[in-house]
Amino acid sequence: MDNFLKQSWAGLRILLALTVILGVAYPAAVWGVSRIPGLHANAEATDTTLVAVTREGDKYFVPRPSAATLPASGGSNKGELNEDYTRIVAERRAQIAQREGVAGDQVPQDAVTASASGLDPDISPEYAALQVPRVARASGLPVDKVRELVAASTHGTFTTTVNVTALNRAIDAAG
Image (tube, one colour):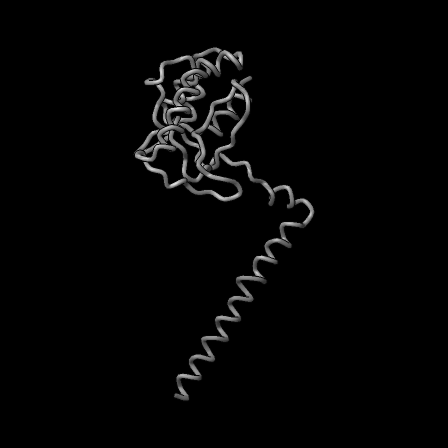
């Protein structure tokens, strides 16, 4: 029993010490360093090509819809047999078909199904190709130039995807 108490007390002390060090002191130190003049702007940078950054206007490519509600990310857990989900997907398909000037059956699946995290910057090459004419018309860039920018933002090993955030930055730089 005496040995059990010694080990329990030692474990409790380690737990408390590590909680204070890793849960309070370390985050406070990192936050403090980020407030040093000259580092603050870099510490608060959030715009990255790893996260979908939605831009307004027809001159930009549109990412997948989001199932997330800010500030959290997470899916809706609604399946394809759910009537609400089916209705939402049909509405999205009709809106995208109208915006892009195509028939509903030409709208790719990733254009109408939401990204669970709401942070996914990638779309299929098919969805990007569907948007090329609208983006070219609205941005004033030639269609071939927009296709080149899409190709430059297309990557993948197992699945080929187009990074919308990087692509929209390229549209801004080219325009």
